[in-house]
Structure formats: structure tokens, C-alpha cells
Length: 116
Image 1 (cartoon, rainbow, N blue to C red):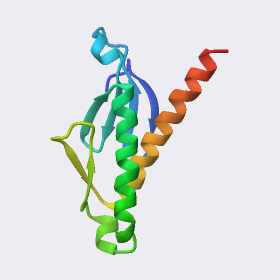
Image 2: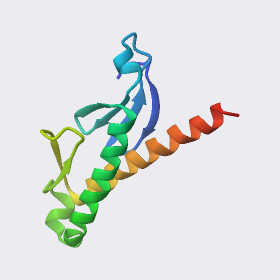
Image 3: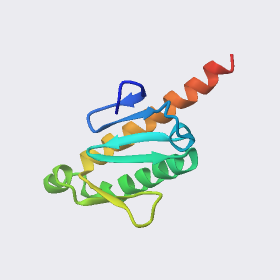
Image 4: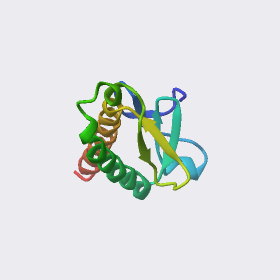
């Protein structure tokens, strides 16, 4: 991330931002850095990732009390790209969910404020 990007939301696990890149492809994307993984998502892919994250948390709830599953990356978060999944602990899944929810909130708030 360079100093030209505008941060949308950040937490312990990652950051989301938009880029004023000269490339139209990157300007129209929501950029996420989760741990050391970068995703460049359009709005449909972002919404899909949010749903997939909530589903992963639901699947992992049965392991929420297990000390190993809470701290070790044994839960798979599927992405909008079928060939790519990311491994997280239960606690990390909750952080990813917060990152996605915070990003969505900030984007929706910006839409509302720009319409005033």
C-alpha cells in the first residue's frame, strides 16, 4: 500500500482501502490485505466474501471452545474464487468478519453522505 490509497477500515488482521490507480481495474475494486494476502474485489465479490465468512464462522462455532481451533488456523475461508481458500483460527475468522463488516459499513456510509 502506498500513501495514495485511502484507508476504508483496519483492524488487527488487516486493512481495506481504495486506490486512485491509473488503472480502471484497480480504481473500481475494494482492496483487502488480510495477514499477508491481498484481494482485489468488485462489489459483488466483496458481498460474496462477506457471506462466505459468515458461513465459515457458523461452521466453526462447534469448535469455538476448543483451545486448538481458537488459536490455530484450522478453518478454511472460501473466497469468491473457487481455487483459493484461506486458513484461519476461529479468533481470526471473527477478525476477518469484523474487517469485512467495518469495510461494508464505511462504504455504505460514504454512499449516504455523498448523496446529501
